[in-house]
Image 1 (cartoon, rainbow, N blue to C red):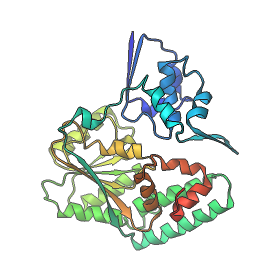
Image 2 (cartoon, rainbow, N blue to C red; image 1 turned 90 degrees about the horizontal axis):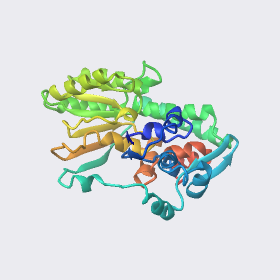
Image 3 (cartoon, helix red, strand yellow; image 1 turned 180 degrees about the horizontal axis):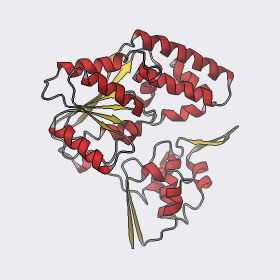
Length: 335
């Protein structure tokens, strides 16, 4: 008679997934969908959940997105992004959605303070960052659509800012990891307790070995871990007051509330994913103010990205579908 879906946003936002098609085979008198992040890219993320809730009203995906999203025709097909007709959408959602803010549910909960720490690129990072940025701008100027080479260049540009060793193991760690080494070495050896979030699983090895070199007790969380391994890693982190390294996209459905300090070395270009990671340390059981620090390189491409995210553009990834908008973003103009 009742189906309850807990945090299905990772597999229920896309109408083409096997998971969504599987859910369509079920019928129940009641359906409850619980998620803290119902949409990321735009209103189109809502349609699969709304369709399951009322298949008659939300029978047509294209009618829904043409009403509440921006839809452009491209060489590769239709590009659906963003949200429009927001007041009408808000009125429609009020019939199907109950929204509760964390501050409403837990009014006594200590605050979460988020800021950026400006750092300067290492010589290696500066050299490769500027070369990759210039190459990328040249590619964008030559194409009306995004190409695989362009997207690869974007990826490498992001990687060099996390750790140059991701491009070449013979390079240095980069200024971000060196900053984290300094933070670790200055802490009480018995209470070096914080979390480092990063977009790239491959970076965990380099961050871990660098922090181990200065006495850190390091644990890891990433996609593909068994429930048992995840639980053991978190338990060791709590008992030893150690350091946890976690991939941002994997940061959901578990608590790291034993610590009140976290750093982001790199960020996803989707603020809902970054915020989801932040909240691993900001939980109902949190006892003190949580401090979240984003390490931000001066005069870098990601500095522009973080500025856009901070102004309320929830998903910078949408600019990856438009060479013109990405070019503006890299040059510091508003897309």
